[in-house]
Image (cartoon, rainbow, N blue to C red):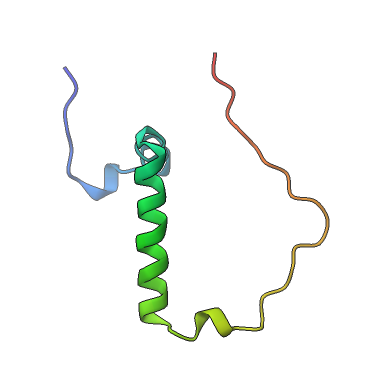
Length: 67
């Protein structure tokens, strides 16, 4: 029998990733919108920031292979 822990020390990044991946896409998108709304609420000038630089070179997407 698995135990459920509410101790933040036991919450590894891997456990958080597994939890996030278990969510349906609609819930993931809802979380993205919520975090975006929070960021804009805390920093309303965020969309007008000009210090963002494009990524040089290529971006490589890594994925976990499952067997």
